[in-house]
Length: 416
Image 1 (cartoon, one colour):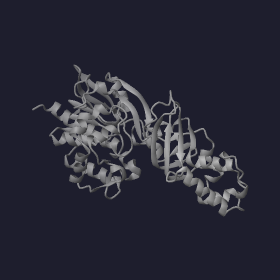
Image 2 (cartoon, helix red, strand yellow):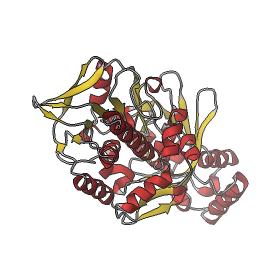
Image 3 (cartoon, helix red, strand yellow):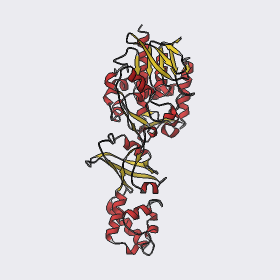
């Protein structure tokens, strides 16, 4: 049986940060990653550009965490976004700040972040074992060793579970950490998808499959007609419903599909108030008085949207513009300003960017990320019941909890 002071399970953002921070404190660390390469999920974050963090204060990060944000108070004070930016710059990665304070590599390449982390793992001579951790063994309530799928066993004084949630299972996030945590006596809060596309029963979504709308305003209301999300940006119609940046952000605010019903309302012309848009519509109708309605609307709406608008307004596409009634014009105007889409639920968790739910945070020390039930057991990243909105906040949580777990485990295994 081989040995290590600390075993880190999971070679994602949180796991690599935990391993690096522990090794920098002089601890003996072994990283276990079931894939042949570390950081696979990082490759696909930010559309392959890797939204590293958000250039803001710890308070602003917590405000972007709808679930258990207070739990992160200590870790975010210890590891704010500014620390993360400095960490990567010191590893040779130039960064830039874009709209919404989102931080990206100057190169727009997620690979640069992964290469920097992998390079630091190598510099610190942290061995990477490409295997799957199947069991954590205890002696008198304290971590003593871990077993691997290959049959191997590694003796250790501490284990950091950073195996991710259930989103993007192809990257290795298949719930191993949840099973291991539960086997060690921890409560795992119901796991659900977050930052996920939305399904709709409305057939017109499929008719407009592939249509991307930019600079639209999305408002989401629950069944009590309370607004739970409102923002401007880009969305996409798909064969199953809605996707795109706006929709992913909105999904994080739609927390309870079992008990609540949601409806999306899209303002197709947010820059124009109703009176201005009505005047514009009237001009188009007058200028194209002898043209069919499906041609007249070409200057106001994308081609795929026009037949849907006309159908929902109960207007024939071959109706002449000069024959349009005031009531029909009113219905069109209302659709431009409030195009509603019914939502039946989220896409499967496999399609989600992050996982909501996980290891119950009341059973974890918020400063050390250490288990309150098992000595030598630590948690980091998406495995915890903490998730945030889009904008680099989820990766910020991964870096901060990873650092806390790594440094705490190092202090635990070598208290001197």
